[in-house]
Image (cartoon, rainbow, N blue to C red; front, side, top):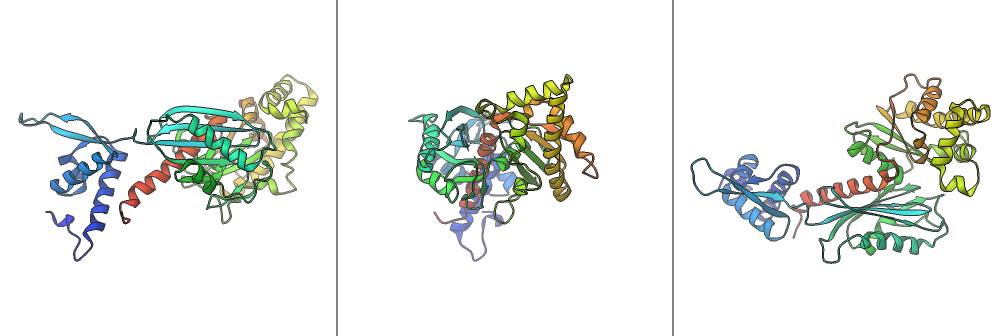
Length: 380
């Protein structure tokens, strides 16, 4: 046994968990490897690695992945890979009028997506059951189990996954969202403000891929902000970071309605209605132009305040009204020049309406990673 396999005067059970965690992380984040290759990378002895991979194959976390031919003509070496099909992840978006779900394998590959319309005044317990049913509906009855879920919802959501305040969804305030869905789905659940999951999604797979400091602005029948700092959603002390719309001087609560009108049709499809307003403005309609300018100014006032506070590298505009395309980018950018010392680059969301569910999957993946690699050091 190598010296690295021995914990001086220590707990051999703890060491076994630590070594297992190292092997799991190596194969989760990298390509399939043979026992010899794992031993070389981790500096563990081959017998130690052999015992670990055998146990991990037996409990379903690793899978056999073919063999490497040896140059000497000897017995081919078996490769081992993390089994990303061993479980499922769910990303869930619970909004005032609908619920969306995205089901993936443990690597984030999409397997199914679902959507349900819901009444705005639906009872909170029924809304939760609808969300859980939508997830279960897209899981195979005899398929791999759900390992984790990430859920986003409008409002202020604290670090425990409790909704401290929600204006958009009636009787939603005070709900322990993560805990209740944990009971219904029987898996670990992480809950966040919807725009924070959206900005995480843009950072991982969308328009802000690889950019660590991002401001995401949701343009829809309501306005909202998500903040990413150093690649992680920034929530602040209580989960209220980015709730710039609370400031009465900005008028964000009324701004979307002034653009799309107050009709039920406009509220149910603000993207189409807003797009038409921008199109009319571009073609010289003076009333539409004044409406668009007022909207862009109000949006830019809020964005400008956030830019001056957090100085992001990139601003991503998402939500239904981002469907107006370059016109909305230019309108907001023009207004920002009067507010910011230097206007950061602006871009449109690459994920559109699905950003929150995508971010939910990413948050669930982070939860699995943390539990996989940390749990090995905990007691069995």
